[in-house]
Amino acid sequence: MAEKPVIGVLLGDAAGVGPELVAKCAAADFYSAFCRPVVIGDQRVLKRALDVIGASDKVTLQVIDRVEDADWSQGLPVLDQKDLDPADVPFATKTVKSGRACLDMLKLGVELWQAGKIGGYVFGPLNKAGMHEAGLDLESEHHYLARLLNHTEPFGEINVTNGLYTTRTTSHIPISQVSADLKENDGMRIKRAIRLSYKTLTSAGIENPRIGVAALNPHCGENGDCGREEIEVIAPAIKDAQENGINASGPFPSDIVFHKALVKKEFDGVVTMYHDQGQIALKLIGFEGGITVAGGFEIPIVTCGHGTAYDIAGKGIVTTASFENAVKQCSQMAVVAAK
Image (cartoon, rainbow, N blue to C red; front, side, top):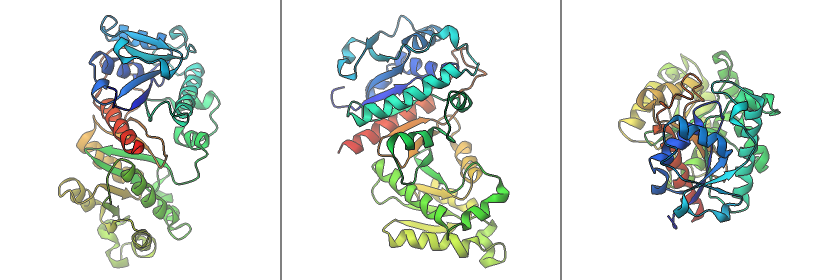
């Protein structure tokens, strides 16, 4: 354990499955193979989760006030926030209190990393609506993290499944708006996405990562007969990346790029032009185990690829494959960052 990174494990939204994921991994002694975990959240919420999964007698909690006090030989360290009575956060119910607790634990995780106390953190699924009602005035937790870190470089969600990293050029916008966004500022968004992909892949320990860039139009635009985005903005953005030392290639038709990446193993990462272009492929090959990396930041931050799953929260039946992969990924990135 002494050589493994210290990783924060945030409970996430108390009304969802996050605490159960944390508890199940603890009961299975999963963490010890990859990291030295420090749970961040209210110990009462974790105890409720342990009760739900029937593991209260299998996991010894070591409540601490400082990360430095953690002794993994004495049980699972819990940095108890004392801020969330389970009675105030019933399962499957969005609450402002849980939203506030999520914002606070994300912030504490950043502060602990900045102080050199942890090497990164994983977090259980969050409820964005609850966080917005609790005062978050930004689009997502990624924007919140960027503010906390005073981060001005490209950042965003990187989805990882079966070892393949995908980066979106555009995300939660209507399809009718995608082309205009790609063309904005001479393909600025595409250049940004390629740089973000490169930085995330290298932070995961992949040297000179191979990045495939998807086309927007069918058949890669048919030399302009079926759209000119490939000619006017995507190909020039790839050339710009190559001139800056990034091993990017394309554009490739999106019905081919994932075959090249997943079957032929030609790419470590794929940059897509819009949300579903990548999400459909990844969820088809690995719906249960996909994860999300907070790409672009110096601090390793990873979460599972699914949400709070209110429909099964409190039932003890959530599967841990995705959260386990998040722990593995964060631990790996923390080791790379420490070198």
